[in-house]
Length: 162
Image 1 (cartoon, rainbow, N blue to C red):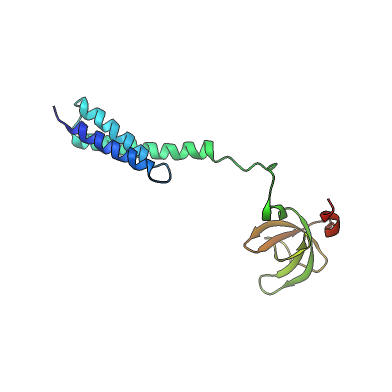
Image 2: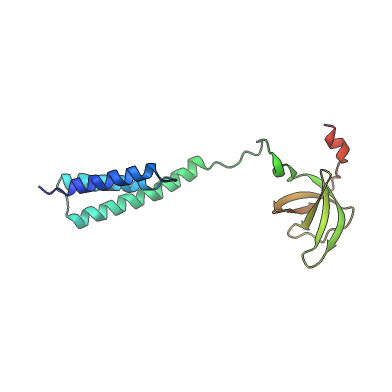
């Protein structure tokens, strides 16, 4: 009887041990694939080429399946009712344009929460005009992208007193 199963078990042990010392979750599946190949070798099923093919198929299939499983169950969408903190709190807030758009990018300035931000009109919006009420749509770096709104910004002193 061939001792190939011992070699496959050693390879499986190396992959599983290496998984402990590496970030992520990747090498374990190659250890499982090597264990399946070891079982095949122990039972005398197939040649080394067949064992290698089974090792690769099982390992790659488990890597692909684990990615799908992890994405489905571990990457849940952000809860919109979750407490926002830091810069995230500015998204959705109403501000007032304090400096009209200029230049090719229609760069202007908007006051939100008492702070003045470099602002750009959101996609599909016209250039900003001083005095317009705008809602913050998104943040990129130290600039905000805004869209016009019918609501008016509350005075900062009123917000600070809450």
